Image (cartoon, rainbow, N blue to C red; front, side, top):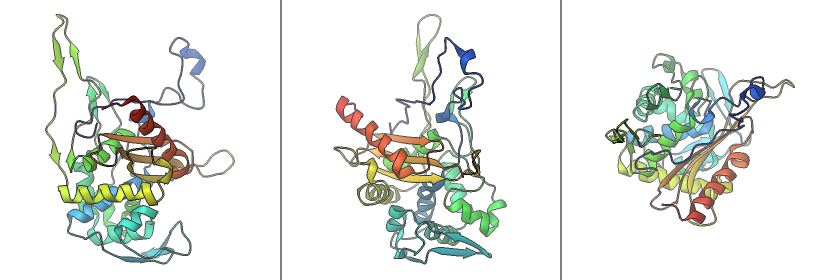
Length: 310
């Protein structure tokens, strides 16, 4: 839920049979890893954090940049997925088509410090605590000194490099955008009963305003545009609309055949207007966020609508 970040559903695949654990001990697919609570490269989902930092720094969404198909930073060439270039685009269009050069140029303008501050305020870099001795991975944020390198900052701008985050953290990011700019601590357990049968609710943590309502509203509209007109079209539910962001993350690994492993992501909210739910879909080694992760979000949203869940 975007206002409380109560985790209503959580699934990790492949599954295993708890009655026959020995059968899965040597499985190459690591079924005992809870992928929802583990940290991975996040790719272009991170552009939402960069956009939030930029808008909070006073940069207007109308800011333009000419994408020629690549951008050179300190002698290193960063390519756009559209080799011919996107031409002159603003922030909304850059998010819609997921243009790396635009966000690299944007990050270089605002600096790594502001992006890092925004990320920390959103809960990245620290574990989500769900109960005694039970928490998620903290992920990883580069240090401010590392981000003083323009090439490190450039990779950070589109979610690459040493940056790692969990699906839970990305769901919390979406929640902050969808609820008007407030970061809320994820909650897995509503409460517990003590030995006397007394219900003890899990304490709520106060909301942490991390961006203005205006910034959150701009980002929501941009994310809706991604689903309606951009790389997230396969996430569009049958009714209610949605907002989101695709990613195809490169963790720097290769399979036995020498092919690069790509992680597919789609993070978003539902419905489009007055959103109630945040969803993060992570498909390990499935290449394209738009092709593999986005349709899963559509199925989840359609299921919520079918059940009339509120």
